Length: 182
Image (cartoon, rainbow, N blue to C red; front, side):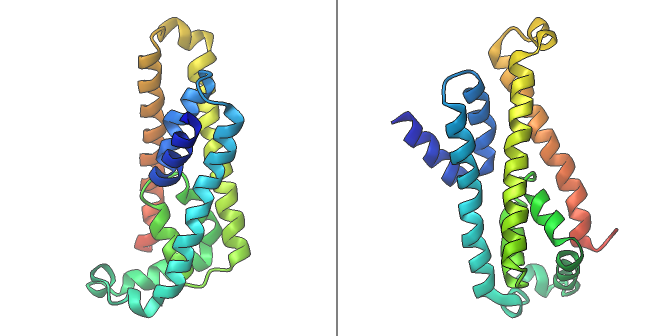
């Protein structure tokens, strides 16, 4: 029952749920293989829906949205960014919460090639889970950290701060792609 709840959490909350779930897996509460497999699938499956939705919306309909209607150059900048850095943007969108869905939709609307889309998202999801594993492993097994962070709640808090700090830093970097600055 617990694993079903975790799987639903990962699927419906998104990659942000990977953070505490990975930490719990390394604590032995949840099987690690389960977290990698279900976390990967839960990160990838919704991407196909958002890509499909982007194809159905199309660029013409996106131009009608207030975000692009008020500043039409934004849609052009997004198209240029996807043409030039598409795989990198899709890969990086896995590391920045709230950046993934718009990226997937825009990739679909701009008819980004599906094989490249799948590869970039799969590598991004795998990279995200490996990063979380590395951070969680460091915060749960390092002798240095154990000396200073004997309380598991503090370790989880520091782990969350580091993970969200990485989100913030990557978010700042990727915003440049959508503003047209290089």
